Length: 150
Image 1 (cartoon, rainbow, N blue to C red):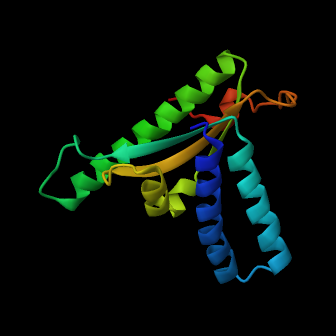
Image 2: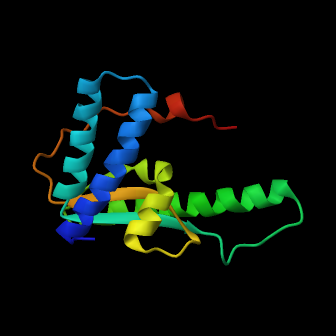
């Protein structure tokens, strides 16, 4: 989405729920306002905003909870994989991207504002655009520190 008015409506609605959650966490009002302001600015200022969703409509349904849960997890993993591929593709085109999972906390709000089908469960939000700064590459752990081969 690139429409500023839609991004503003979405940011405002998400801010209301975010504020409620932060108040339940008993954070100081100054900290709450700081976090809400940052969240709103990120949503509104992103040149492109993408929401990825899970849709279980075409997934298999089993008679037991264990396999239904596994089917749901496979769908969520597929969405996450699509998100990672999208970020890699954006990077290859010289774009910057940020992945946030805030839609998980406000799925119904996003569905209503964007008029999404009820079967679509918002999972992730991506901010895409040209980066202002390109961070230095961080040192990576060597493979044998993070893997076990047998």
